[in-house]
Length: 275
Image (cartoon, rainbow, N blue to C red; front, side, top):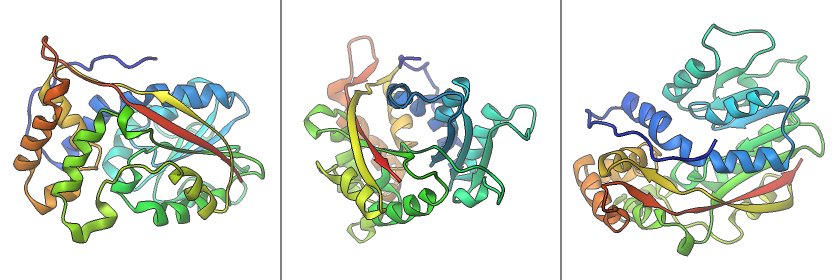
């Protein structure tokens, strides 16, 4: 699976439901190279018991399940989870099939379940959500459900100069209410992932970089896809969605190509830590 320009999406009234759908249909697939690189490096397959933190609408879980892994996923967004259920549980829950839950790891584990052998936290926009401290607590809690020595994978942005999306995300930081610091995007620091792992009681054990370009069929799809990430939520609350969308489109203009598509090269970084 490789990223391609997503199909053209017609504008529609925005709502939490449509944002979740935009994430699933437009934005989530941009991270496929990241998922593939991690699964390949860690030889994910039969025998892997995967716990995905912030599993979203389930694409990464679907890819792991296709490799033969037993997958469990949790998220705090019930709308995205509903879409994940459509993907992973089209015929309803099965005892040996994927399991999805709202909240933390306890939502998908029972007292007699085996420990997980892989934990992932792929969301590179964690600073737009609970922030590093909240993530560290969540990772530490999740690590208690993993076997000793198991890998925990964290992901984040690469160097700003190699991430075209940084210019768009700076719009989110500039327009957001300064009093909403935990919900504002900020650039990734060189050691952010390592510091996060150590704060969670994990031991860093290798890292890698992956090219994850963002490709959109048109400017409208690009704006909708980026708005669906959650990175712009604080800016929308502080101003209004029309203003955020307008300034976001202006920031994306340098990446608009002659055929109307939008192409933004990005590099993501992942860290492997051990329980």
